Length: 249
Image (cartoon, rainbow, N blue to C red; front, side, top):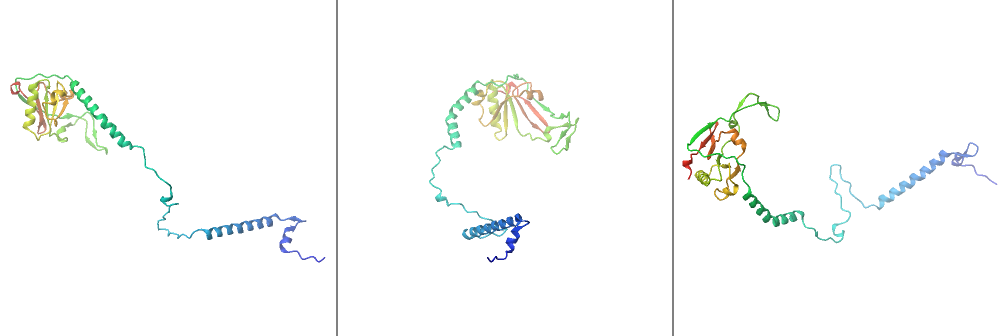
């Protein structure tokens, strides 16, 4: 029988005593894999819809997978808005809160810091300067004042308000304060109470006037030994006017 000459591939496969050359066999498998991969990528590119490639500097616009009308049926939100719920509950609770505030105002008594009236009216000028016990530094570390320096706060803090110190339990002093406020309607004024209650002041003074219990520091810093008294600025000093009992209505 006629035997054909072996091809180059068969000669390459049968060598070294009839053993297969594994490297050639693996190379053939790799070639087949690459061809299959190339065919798959080619089919995918052919079947994919044509899309324009954006330039590097152009924004890429991503289209939704499906238009909104195909998402399915939607339903309105049935839960209440949390803010609306809080506001509704607050409005429903407000009358009760206002009632409690009025009742507490009636019961509240200012801290008892009694001061007598005086028969002699006089004016007193007080220098509010302080001697510093330590350095005062700015936020950036600069030294604003050093320990031992004398500093007058009126050079740095505006003082345009008038302060009236009265005993709210004395109707005469309430009437005097109301007259003093009416005499200077445009001047900002605050009222400090040494005795009485805020309810006593409610009907006697305008609602726009700020009324506070007299703090203990007020009497520690300024020698207020009788009431009524009026505190205001006079240059770089604090002027205290002690009102005599004869001036009370």
